[in-house]
Image 1: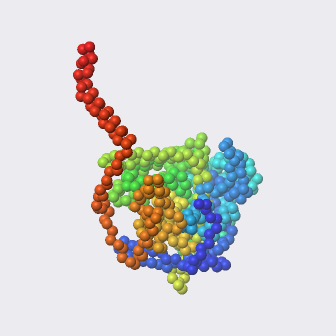
Image 2: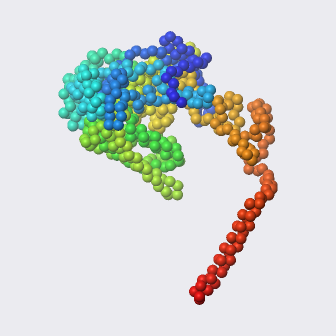
Amino acid sequence: VEASTQFFMESPDMVYGPKAMEVQYEYWRKSVSHEGSVLKVYPTTAQQGPQLGVMLVGQGRNNGCTITTQVLANRLCLSWPTGSHRKEANYYGSLTQVGTLSLGLDAKGQEVFVPFSALLPMVAPNDLMFDGWDISSLNLAQGMPRAKVLDWELQEQLWPHMEALRPQPSIYVPKFIAANQSNRTDDLIPGSRMQQLEQILQRGLDKVIVLSTANTERFCEVAPGLNHTAENLLRTIKLGLEVSPSTLFAVASILEGCAFLSGSPQNTLVPGALELVCQLRVFVGGDDFKSGQTKVKSVLVEFLVSSGLKTTSIVSYSHLGNNDRQNLWAPLQFRSKEVSKSNVVDYMAQSNPVLYTPGREPHHCVVIKYEPYVDDSKRALDEYTLELMLGGTNTRVLHNTCEDSPLATPIMLDLALLTELCQHMSFCTGVGTEPQTFHPVLSLLIFLFKVPLVPPGSRVINALFGQRSCTENILRACVGLPLQNYMLLEHTMERPGPSLKQVGPLPVACPVSNKKGPVPNPRCPPPEAPVTQLPSPSSPLPPRTPPFQAAPKTIKPLPLSKKKKKKKKKKKLLTWVHQVITQNLNFLINFAIFI
């Protein structure tokens, strides 16, 4: 069934106003020790938001340059020839633009799907405006051939539009990124850490989302008195002590009231930054875009553990030739990436204490290499070793070749659009109570990050389908739709009630009668017999014969026809001749030799 492009919820619990959409929703929370309790929630979503600007930290790098070209190519409806066929600009890989969710069944019994973007009012991606910072002075047109991501014909069409886009100067601290990045550093913000912060604040960030896609940094030291509290972090910046460039951008965004999203694996949002976020009520999300190899791993390990197969060893190898991988060649920067890639299987191991006792989690090895020749084409190899019953083993090997930036940029797009949507949503947990928003740490975005950042005390869910269900069900609740489930009681129950009766035609029809009479089928009555009316749920059910205990029926053999009788006699004669020859075989052989 084709996906619908428009959605309108007609329900007494849903009210469409000129400026907002309001819905009443019951949320059931389950607990192991006692029965579930119900909480009535009243979500409100603004109908129209302002035009959205996205500031990219690292705009001149592969991801920043590619997401700008992606939006421009779609806005201009560009197409270009390739070796096989002509391609057109699209948003493949974006959950909000291409992903769909089910609304239910229509009158014909067919499932109806709508895109995520049709469910609630989201900013159109073609209307996004981009700007940002970078340590390189090249404009984005010059950055396209350096990134080696787009086809040359597409680059030529985009060149005049990209030539005028030049990132602002950025912050460079040599000890946080690899030394091999020094040849790109020709457009820097001078001064101390506090002066750099003040220059970022002078940019006048307003109604924008700041998204960090810069080089992977080494982990920043976290210590009491340094960055454990918001006060300590601001004092550390003032004194010029240990603080990373990405943390400086995060603090500047938070102070300006702009949402900040960390797409790199290092600990950008240190405890002091998170405390500042809670004080100023600004949204943040992180860490590290979950795009290719890690996304497949979160799906495959979830499938294996859910199937009762014990994954004992995971070895992941990959090599890439872009600047991001060159930066990871340094040991400290590689360690940041290794940690984010390794943590993705922890949740699946913890979800099955039968397979994994404490301290016996799967062994996980991550190897990352830099190979300049392959450019942005990432080559990944994963080996999964499993334990089977009775000491058996199973090894599964997966090879993956993909372009890194076209996988990451749709995720960046979704992060910006979903964060902007959350800024226009509020909730009330009862009549007359004050409306509230999401927690400043946006756990709604966990589907898009390798190491999901969640509020203190919250569970971290790394299973991909659980993460997607979280995002989908929250959006469904905002328009009064029930949570998605796959119980299918109308199909699995023998006698579903009237409220569960199947809509549309039955998928299985009674077989057509043949010449010798109807084919016996216990589920379909004879054509001439009336359909038995099922008892109502309130009336007592008639007694039923237990299954597999019915008395055996005596079946009388049918009389054979003349042709069948002749066949039977002929078969008996051939059987007798065969027995005679077999019993006298030795005698016949000796007689032949004697002659």
